[in-house]
Length: 267
Image (tube, rainbow, N blue to C red; front, side, top):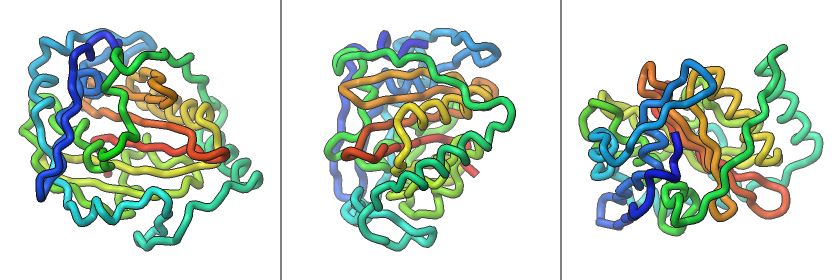
């Protein structure tokens, strides 16, 4: 599955409209999340996004976002488990980074953590769907890329911002060990079962990518790793249950890695 091959000419439409933010998902990102990929082996089957009705339908979906909550979002602040604002994200301490790394390794036992393949570097024109941290795109808007699972009804649900959603991510895609959650959102429903979280960690992008690559592959997801304008994107699907995810990673300052995860099949 090649995200970049199917994304030419796609447009991102972000519209503030009183009670909602609409993100008309790019064909490339939707292909990454909704395509049927072979997950029985390390190889992945390609699908033509331009002719897939599920992908075409997902491009027109809307996700409702409370504009008051959007205004409250602040990437410079961390949340405690009850959702309270705890102030600026703390600078990582070497001991904390080591503890996070050890906790991540421990989760995989004797099998260890896999090394993700080298990322494919693409241009903005080749991969407009790889956009993650762009002005005006809220965490809720990012969750729209997950709306519209194959064969299911449109997702017109109102996403809820609350730190509790961080604990309800799919079990195979949790917050990185000891990560500092800055924002979380989610929605439940027959046709909408979305989870989204933003967090920071003192561990490197490579460490975090390897962690989620291992999590995804061992949970039978496909995984494609791209870099666009310095931002890393890892995403894939699981054919057996239409589960899908996308992860955006970028450096924040000198010491932090900031991560967005959007996934369906949450708890």
